[in-house]
Image 1: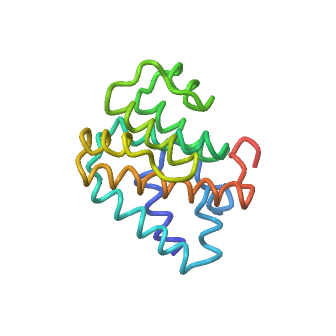
Image 2 (image 1 turned 180 degrees about the vertical axis):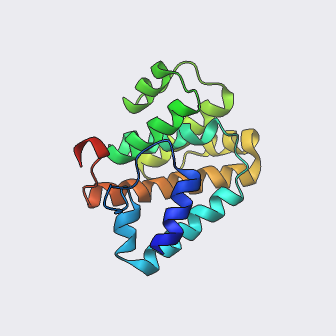
Image 3 (image 1 turned 120 degrees about the vertical axis):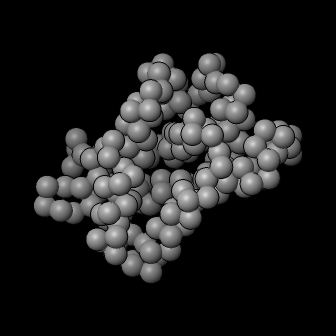
Length: 171
């Protein structure tokens, strides 16, 4: 499983440090290696979500950063800030998102993604107007993906916080 995760990391996550010099994985992967059945299931979920993604590329990082900010998950924010910067997200937008605030420069799709992710991270039932707006914006498959994405990154953030996973600068 280590080798499989390392291949996935090398091909998909190269904007940030995910491996120590001694070969140990950083981020959520190391805790998942300690529970191989769970780690494999999470890896498979992540791969399935990536392979079947329909959301616009600019929408996913908005939702992921909303989750990371709401959970105050240090490694999550470190990693996905690096990814967003590599993809050209403006620094002002990044700063606003990590401050747990809604940027004023979001387009309609990004705004809907922000609202859905923010509402879900509060807990409770997703407000019906937000759900209907997501359906109108992304369709059923895209709305489903967005809900699952928030759930996946909530689990990632919980893993990172639960195991006190440091960012590389503090490792």
